[in-house]
Image 1 (cartoon, rainbow over the protein chains, first blue to last red):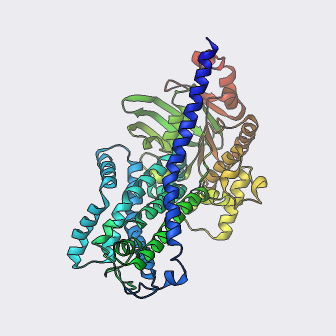
Image 2: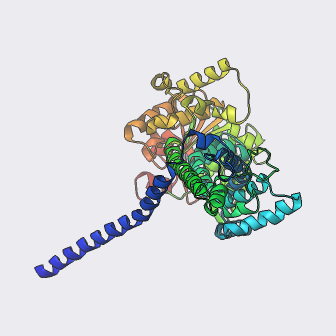
Image 3: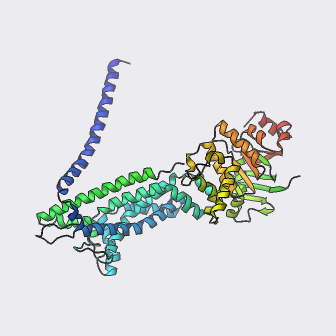
Length: 282
Length: 252
């Protein structure tokens, strides 16, 4: 053992540490740049009027995104109404029946579903809902977004339920509580934090989806509350305004981007809080 | 002879092809503590899990023979109803983490959809916590989460939860194995006090514990019932050579 060898090793160790730190910072740079860019361009457009008024025709001053905000809200509610019950039920099934052919196929299709491009899901919703119902509608957009949410909700439910100790289930069954009530009243509440986190994160993810909405919810210049009619949403509005040739619409698109990014960050933050708040100690 | 609450007759249990219990016959008398003792893997936990039909929750589990609770074959009854009459406390304290102490105690009623008036449920909670010797420690905190309690208190909460259902029998599956000596002593005292209200079957691998708290002791070895009799006799002049060897620490 000579000292020179040890010195070299210590040097290698330091180089490794510096390398890892440098790469970690490199990952942060694009995120920060994007955020700074959006904030710089978007914040000027955002004010109370922007949030509460309808889009203005070309050439007119002002105009806002109120209909897109409401539309995004309605689309999220529709998507959750579809994906939360289905996703939680499937997650329960997968965690209860870990082996078996059906579980294998369900798990496989969940993984495949996660990999399907969002535009394809849009086309599916178009052919399932839009064509059948004879027109673009918020409902079809909700279906498309709901399908996109499904894999995340299923996965987070399954993974959270797997972490619940068996002793809890036994405690309930030993009291003579039927199986379904043990699941609904004991196991699910104990897993609520993880399931909520999964739902919030998937909502954050679909809130910014544009592709599946292009030929489903379609967009609308009006304040539309009927889910069977075309409806505007934030990403659609950004898409339409940003691809328009008018500079003042570009400003509005930046403002809407800012609002959307704030919403997504808020969802992520709430998800963190929810995890901590609903944390269950066993 | 005291009246018999539970009668196990020629009972065998299997996991797949493996035979865990071999033709066990036991008669458990009322308001006594019966200890089931034996080395690890002898089937003692399986035996009490068969009594309230928890054994069959494991895939591949199968049984033969009879277990009679007050003359009624538990394997002909609905397992849900059987488990309401037979309380169970597990190795590791497992209070329901989302519920308060109060709700934990009353959980058996609430989860089974039995409606109680506020007064009735208050009375059951207080009564059960008193029987489990926990009332004085938690009376100010019954609306706090049960998981804030210490391990020993949690285990007594689990005992209170089982007692609240007014079971015929209380099964204790190594209830002190996850507890420190002080909490263990507390639970042992409690077991002796509880005889008055309920018949107790205690599984333990701790010879001294069986000797301290039980009236009757069954010694199980490799799935067979080697010896069953009054603890005083079994611990002093056992009939079977294997019992003697186990008690003197030659194996186990």
